[in-house]
Image (tube, rainbow over all chains, first blue to last red; front, side, top):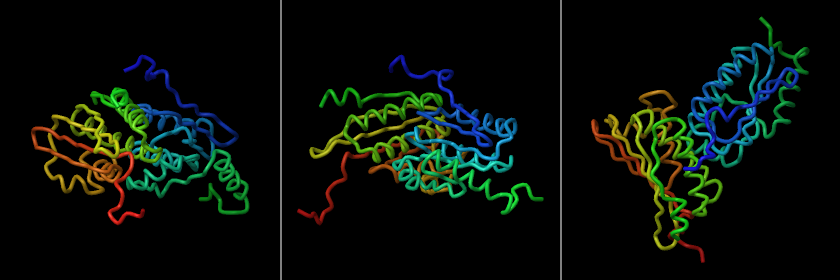
Length: 138
Length: 147
């Protein structure tokens, strides 16, 4: 309809490394192909950067449908297999209400209200690691 | 009224995942124009995304038509998704959670139905599928009233 519609190449998902955590910020409206590519990028980045956690900030995401919900759950599953934990941060209240009505409660997905809270969640767990259960225990 | 209709009424193709983005953006803009609250907007856009994806993935592509409706007291947004795909042989089963004929969680149709106020589906094997959903800016007052 209008010419300023974002083209595939113009949209990108920033993936930053903060210590041993990968911070992924989703914004606006992801098209399906891009969400699938993001999964591969995150899995590769976990291994390349040897991070122990992934925080996915979705505070800028207006809707999560069953496709994007499944993408998020799969990212968490990939990360778990690669010895990293995932926290989805900043879900909007309207998105949470809609997901439950849709029937998608994502029980395996850990959430936090903000990126800061998510980092704290991962940081606290890491700080507790030496004395607590060993993440790398055989 | 006609100015609102200009931003609401549209016929959009559903041929690629980029078209899904366009459909979501249009439904967001149209529902905001009609005065839907944020939660209802989010539900409507999410339902549209599920249904448009069904049209694309299972129907082999198609289109959606957005129209403004009214019953004198409130405005509504009606979305009609149509494809000429293989159709759905068992509608009852297709509407139950967990049903899927392809990739996904099988929440598409049943989930979308819960997110809108009115839902109708017409599917003929070998001919195609049409799904029509309508949501209103405010739900009708309960019969027992309160004034």
